Amino acid sequence: MRFLALLLGLLLLAGCAAEPRQVTGPPPTVASSTAPSPGPAPSEPTEIDISKIAAHSTLVPLGLNPDGTIQVPPVSTPRQAGWYSYGPTPGEIGPAVIVGHVDGNNQKGIFYRLKELAPGDRISVSRKDGSAVVFVVREVDQVDKDAFPENLVYGNTSDAELRLITCGGSFDRTAHSYVDNVIVYAGLA
Image (cartoon, rainbow, N blue to C red; front, side, top):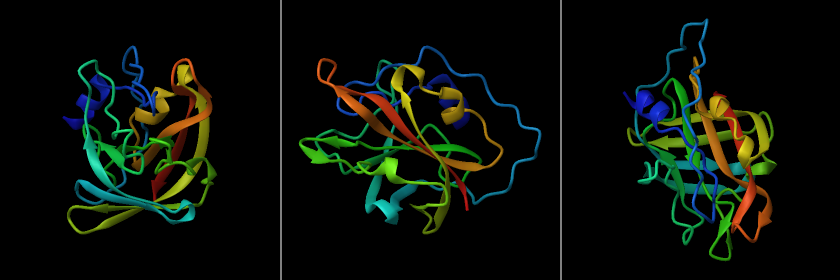
């Protein structure tokens, strides 16, 4: 049911310091020819820790705005990260999504250094059940917001995966928003 809600409400983090843009429709699902790998039981995430970039934050659940765009943590608290609660929990089969600001309120955000991650770096997510799941970065990408890869970010996966999203690129002063997104793709260690 959560995945259906994810597909129906797919959207992208587009605005870090402004309102996010709405995706025009859900991406096609990705068919998998392999059986899913078993993972830990679902449990709501509580914290994220990325030692390499000194990023540590509690996680607030995020849903959808009335216009169908993803909620983001308040820009007035740019060190706060949030988890898209209509998607899989970190460690569950599918792409769990965590978003955070690159900056805001004249401060560096929780994901200010996200673009510095590289394949092999580790991300730890603590969970409400007392466990932690560790993900290994597979790829870091920076894309124009108008070319956001919905299917790669939100599409079905056969394993537990994690997506981290923030803003990047140059700042468009007219739109009060960054022109790109930085996306980290990681798999369960």
